Amino acid sequence: MKVEDVFCSKPRLKILKLLYRYGQLNPSAIMRKLRINYRLTMRNLELLESEGVVHHRLSGRTRFYRLTHSLKAEATVNMLESWEP
Image (cartoon, rainbow, N blue to C red; front, side, top):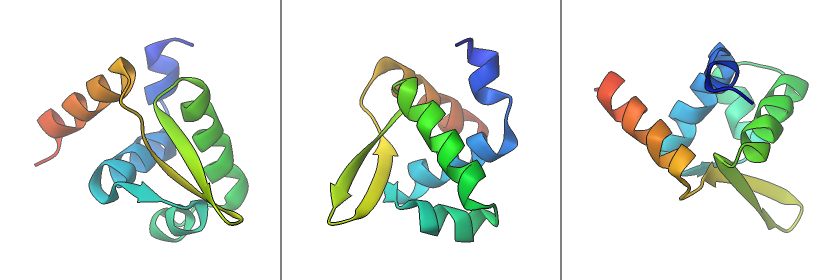
């Protein structure tokens, strides 16, 4: 997938900002903080995971998502740090 396809979505960018700020979150927390529905949240998390930017871990039945340590995730963090105070 092209970089512009990954970053062209406002909800996707907001999810990345939240994960950068809080470290890890479950989909319900992301939904509440962004006021978006479950389907949109999961679709964006799955896309980001397929691109290697985020990954999840299971704790019981709950999934917690966080940024990976990949080059794509590091570039994303650099972008967020340079644009966000």
